[in-house]
Image (cartoon, rainbow, N blue to C red; front, side, top):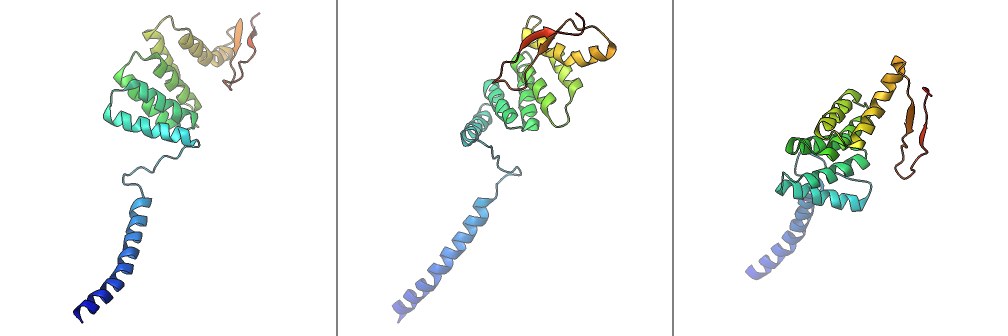
Length: 178
């Protein structure tokens, strides 16, 4: 009789335990453990790469190369706040990192409410770091061009900078000044 009761009890408990286990797994596994929601990128390859870089940065907090790459991924996915955070972190670690200056300026310009004054300050800071960097000066002049037009300063040569990096654009063209 005792053996029969144990068999009946096991038959009754096993289905209950499996249901309870399923409920716990579904509730516990479907929500993130931290306060942030899991990041979902459009491209699964980029998602894996971003996850790898986040883990790498957790272990090696001073890894500026990984932070710049992660910031580029965020920038390409339109996650401007996250990109800005990564590039600013790189500049805290290495204030002379020209690529981080340029990418931070770009992220500040591309966000829904562009912060153009801050983007110009970042580029000016980059120009102080590397006075001979053509990319810095080109981007800085590109930012200053609208203000010069408003003031009526003649623009001798204007660069046609394409929005799509896959299309190289037409290059130089004559401006209003001659």
